[in-house]
Length: 69
Image (tube, rainbow, N blue to C red; front, side, top):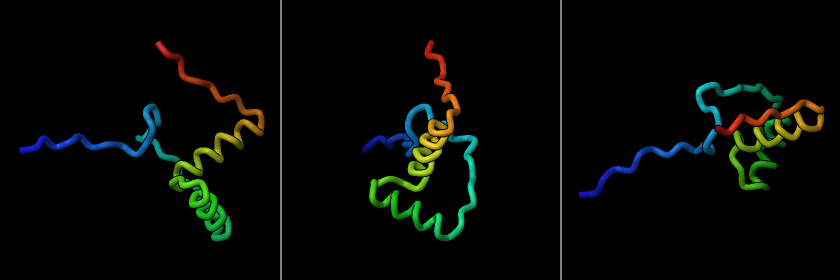
């Protein structure tokens, strides 16, 4: 008899999964996002998160890292 494995979250450790952020896109924006995600072998969620972080950095928004301790 085998022991069932606990469920594994697709989110990286430390990613907040209880408060997702939704965004509505135009069809051409979604197509471009899907194409880029496929090209980089990423999920749509991962691609959106990466693009959001890059956009925040480009606009000068400080990304505050959580304190470790």
